[in-house]
Length: 411
Image 1 (cartoon, rainbow, N blue to C red):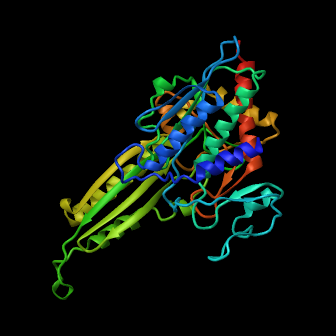
Image 2: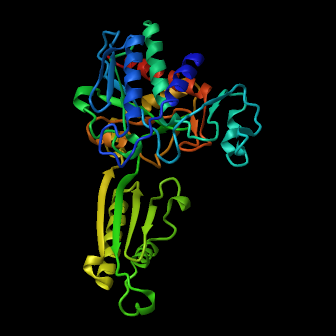
Image 3: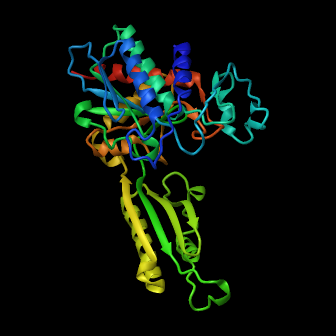
């Protein structure tokens, strides 16, 4: 199993599949379709049924039931795209056998070092086989590790028909990193009762709570006059933008919050005296608090419009997704089965909220309750990203065990 996982994962990460929020197409980049087509051929090769890909790059397939019991149809999903935070071009994965616990020099020329001083979690991986970057790109374990784990688990179940299971559906989706993953996902065609995204981090993660999320874009318009004669006439758009930002609670930012605490996150600030644009994301686990955050934004904007003029500020604020807990709690047994699967493999479940986005948030509101399970990766979206092969193997075992438990508990 170990060699299969490594081979699959390395072949996937070498394909640049970074998504692009500025592209209107789906998938947003051609590399995603390249990987999707590769996965279609691999699914056929290992013996999956009903393998399909649509014009938007959504891949689906089926492992038929091999039991007479009435078992719910369960799905496993992962996304093919990688993040836009750091380059994914020319990924050159490094395999470190029997990690000895010392610092790892990822790139000697540029002095990129993966150290326990900067990343204390690295201490948990002594004696593991690690896959790292070469210090010049991200790795892409988010979410190509999930793809490799699902593919390996399906291959294992096909080769071990003595393991009884119900019907299993698999899907690989585009553009999760830019929030569009479920937008063109055909839930009716997928036709599963429940699903799991293999899209978490360190071993044991089991998540069924996510933020309520909104995107916010503000445009401030000023009047630019020569500074020597500007008194009483100049209106500085950049200063109005700063005034808006300073009116938000200073301690409610990502770098100052954790666990169930929400935030306002300034993503970008571009502009000058004439025009300045701000982009934010707004996050909160509690729906009432989420609505209160949006109301505060609107209140600050209204006050600034009253002060500087109604035409000085334009606002675009849209909800992106909601806390999936509301849709998963009525079928909490799917979380319990995943937890029991981990415990049976001597993995301690770490039930925690997702402080980020996941396709499961949107899918759960589309009628497909979808908790999230670990992949084994750390430090996603940057040059210090790495993953443990042993923990990837554990993720494969969890998938297999979940399938077994659903069958065993069915009538």
